[in-house]
Amino acid sequence: MIRALINLYCFLLIVDWILSYLPQFSHHNIVKKINMIAEFSLRPVRKYLPQDLPLDISPLVVVLALKLVQALFTILW
Image (tube, rainbow, N blue to C red; front, side):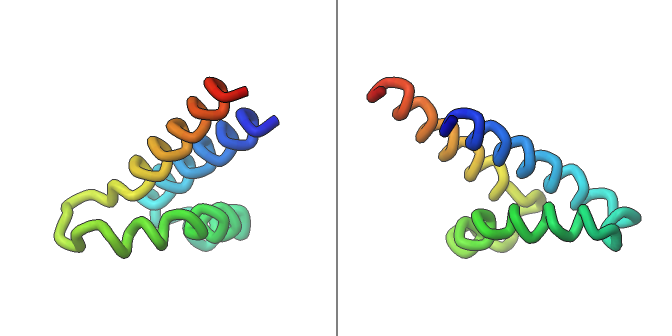
């Protein structure tokens, strides 16, 4: 169950990352909801990353952290 939730959230982060480069969809309600859910974990990571990076790598950092947690759950249980 935890593995499925982590995979779903990683998928949501990737979708949010792709949609952030497509501004024509930013006014849709579903895109706003996806962004709101993704920002929950991305905002704290962005505080610690340098502001002058050309790309936002916070989704990558969060996905890698979630996959690490998923691997630890697999090893421990």
